Length: 493
View 1 (tube, rainbow, N blue to C red):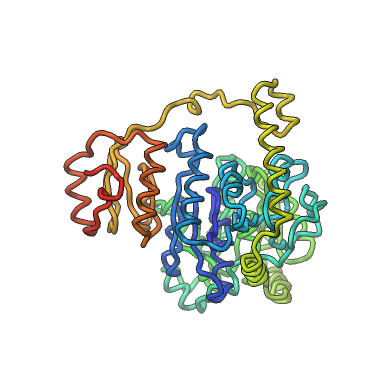
View 2 (view 1 turned 135 degrees about the vertical axis):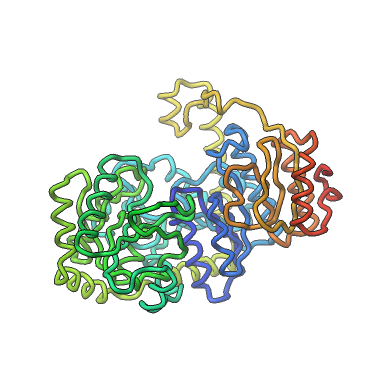
């Protein structure tokens, strides 16, 4: 199975796909395909993974990126002989839909979280019928969902998908020791996500001040997407994955109300104050926080209401309140969504794509092509009503392919320093490898045919010429193995 994830700002998509793979109990051979630089976390579970640059990295011009993505997906599915392709994300990229069209006998499955903000997502949902199936992870706040997905009957709904129950949790003592925390003080987990909003920063500051003054140790997460931030003083910072493994170390939490955070914390019975992040584009964090709080599973407060937020912090500091929250969470039934989703995916892979669905997909693709083609010559307002976004006109979308010198590094150990004029070609999965450099990443253990196919794809989307720096070559050769990819279509170094 190829389990694909979008880029995202956090670890949610990766966490759900990892939970699905672990819940299969060996019933699938998972290959992770991700646009997130945090994909290296799958190493610890012995899974194979391949990374691709998102359109935001501008490694491939935006106007060519969907075609590039489609070729990458098609090549990977062919190489692995995958029985199914599972895409976890809010919006199915055009590149995913192109790959789906090229492989009509491979079930493409959309794992689509619910709880969308009211009124958003109409364009994304137009393409749901192109997929062989849609999976919808359950949500503890589903009773308050007012998004567009509520009114659809296209999804196979499963329980909440979370790593709780799939990843063994350390004992309290072991988790405290492994994180280097103070065993003699109560500990607060503070994880508000990434945002430049002043109200969220103020909430962060007030939380640190109040809990520190009460004698607590405040522990702040630093997402693996960003790496560990260095601080000389202040809260203890950690950067670990999966965080659910260490949940027993914490006596309380103040957290953003995203899908993964809510379900990991509450199913781990951590007394929690939920803080909606208004920067979320699709996820209805305000409603999730409100509904969960109304059921007695957590507290909630908006960061843009300082008095309400301070009062919620005071309640969380009350041991009686924390005990009630813990008791409510312990009454929850164990989450079963990952197991249900794994069974569904394995079943769909065994059955394949019914001929009727292939015919419907062909018809929908024709309609979609017509909308896109006609949309190019229509005014933007009218084009949008047809589901065709206005023509891209930003200067960054019109630039040509990069001119880069390939640096071949199969079996690379470590993170080399390369210039912006060089393209690292490797099958390594080293943390930090994809940060600040151009990389063409190949699935570890790939066949010669796949290496050749990827060289042909690269030649269509980059200008591969020039020679890499001699110092770069010397450094790479001391770290990589002896395989010769230059004999498989890649320009020689």
